[in-house]
View 1 (cartoon, rainbow, N blue to C red):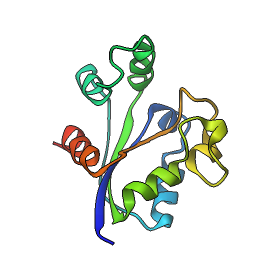
View 2 (view 1 turned 60 degrees about the vertical axis):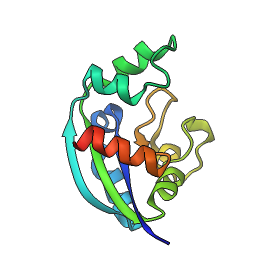
View 3 (view 1 turned 90 degrees about the vertical axis):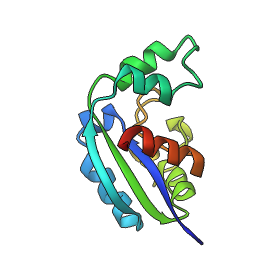
Length: 134
């Protein structure tokens, strides 16, 4: 298998709840390498680009408000099959469907604030890394 890169973002609720260190520790214990990381506040322009597929949906303003409610932690990870591996490790978006042992299964309390985002494909990872890490 080939080493891949992916983009992971710890969302405002992960920061607000003090789970950043815990989640980063779990990612490292999983064996994925963090090659870059930064904490920042998202802009409206970044969110409109990142969520272009839902920007016209009626719930987008709520998503935007949540994502701008505090800082996020963006990371570039490397590892073998890191994209699929992290998607599995994060668990499904709907927290009640996320099994124990996944990040969302262990820490999410609702579907709106679901702690973490991860790229879903190599092309998405490349675009998101470029968007958030220039």
